Image (cartoon, rainbow, N blue to C red):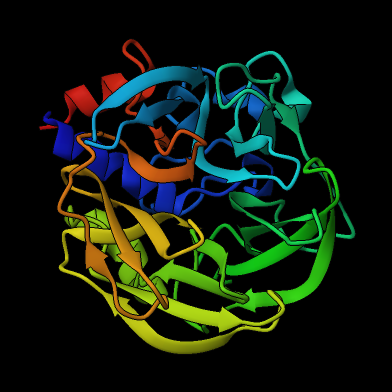
Length: 336
């Protein structure tokens, strides 16, 4: 199986996975990715996101990546710089030695420009609305007052045809303990709203979510062997980061998927997304019109996150392919 096929399968899981604790005891319906067992104990020996790692690189101005660190048994990363200068990383974490932290969003901090990191620590979330699955697919946005907002996906059912997922948020003063902010930030009845990217730029919050189609399309696609939908994304703006208004969709060719993360470098928005050939990037001054970079990152991986370092290079984190020898790697090798 070639790299593109591996990435498509990885993308399918990133788009279709749910937190383990939210799964019913019976087998869930077939979706974009492997079946997630109902609890952490059953996960051992089964293919799943615990077979992947988050790979972190420093990418030079000419696009050359240098591997820095691996966050093991993790996926769907996000990166941000806090007001105190530290870099924070968040990701879905699947430690094999801590069942209480399994399939929870965890955070790490670096105070020396990604040279060293604290150990992953699961976040806490106070006041989560009853019936919602715990957060997955995190996105961090630092606020001017020093707090940080977490945008995330949640749903009330592992069957997206019964309960379509939506984007929610929570607020924190330290990046670890969060308080839930009521009501969805963005939802569309019958449409799969998942995997958002968010940034605060020039006083405006921008939210971009891949257009994954209807619930039926989303669940039917893997059965037909079709790749995730690409090319277009929902775009919303807000003054307070809570009440968003939908504006014109953002569009590229079908090869570029709006699955990734977005940052403001002070002058423009920069989006890092996923394609069949790895990570792509694009810039925009207003979030409406985007221009693809003419300098490819030469970096393989899915659902990238990025933050600018003080030396002008980018710190980029991606969900890597399944580790050799894992159940996921064996499953993919067995497929034609």
